[in-house]
Each structure stands twice: as structure tokens, then as C-alpha cells.
Length: 223
Image (cartoon, rainbow, N blue to C red; front, side, top):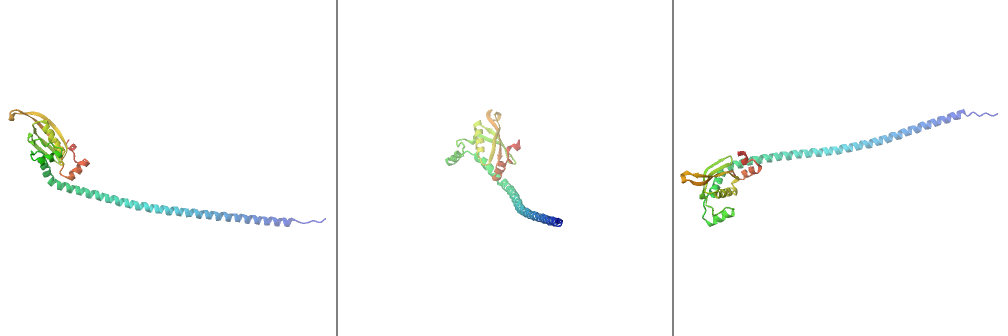
């Protein structure tokens, strides 16, 4: 009988198969490593892009913050300059304003016979036929633009005309009647007159008009 020894061949085949498996495993590991390296590189690129974008956004935000702070500073400086201008305007008006205000009051209380001036009074909504001599002023007090005017009149209609004229004047605001009452004057043969008092805010000029608009100047402070 002929015997053939196959053991060495089987061992060789197994050895070749083991080397092939190891080679395949190494190839797979290298491929996986390359893939991981590629993916990591892409992730790093994306992280750098996001970081660059964030850096640009932060730079823009910083620039906007700087501009905002500069604008806020300019607004603050503008407000301070306006405040100083208001103070100067108020001081300037404080010198000429009382004269203009009293001149207006004298115009309100002046009898008028000239037709042209009567027409001007009519255009202002005044009664051109009213005789201011039906009314006289006993007292005039002005403190910090707050005015109290008191006096006597022949009738309530005379007081109403005075209130209307003061209310339509550019030099008075918040004109209101504090009181009016009928009294008997013994010194004038017990004639009956209307005693009255009027409160108002005196406006010396544009600065006072602005103060009135903001509520800084008002009769409420007097109450």
C-alpha cells in the first residue's frame, strides 16, 4: 500500500491562511485609521471655520458696542449742551421776560379806540368793545413764574373777558380763576363789585414754553 504524507501541506496551507488573515486585518485597520483621520481632519476644518466665523461675529459685535457707546456718549454730550443752552436761555429771558410780560398785561388792560387796533383785538378773539376801565388790579404777585393777580370788577363778564385775554396771550398759561365773589364797598357808597383773584403761569420766552411742555413749570407746584 502506498501512503502519502499530507501533514506538511496542511500546515503550510494554514500558515498561508493565517498570514492572509493578518494582512487583511492590518489592511482593515489601516483603512479604518485613514477614514478616522479623514473624518477628524474634516471635523477640525469645520471647528476652525466655526471658530473663524465666531471670531468675525465677535469682532462685529465689539465694533457695534464701540459705536453704540460712542453714540451714547454723543447723546449725553448733546443733552448736556441742550441743558446748558436752556439755562442760558432762561437767564437771558429772565432779564427781558418780566418787562415783556408786564407790557402784555398793560396791553390787555388798555382801553382802545383806534379802529385798526380794535380789528387786531378782534382777530385775537378779544372783545374789542370791552372797556378795561370796568376792572382794576389791586395786587400782582409773581414768584418763580407763578402769578397771582387780584382786583375788583363791575361784573363777572368783565372778569371773564380778562381771563379770556390772559388765556389767549403768549405770556400766560394755565390761567384760572381762584375765586370771584360779590362784595359791597362802603367807601364807594356801598356799590356792589366783584372781587376776584386769578392764578397763572408767566412765560418769559421759549425756554419757559419748553419747561411748561415737560411739566417742569406748572401751577401744580404752587398748590
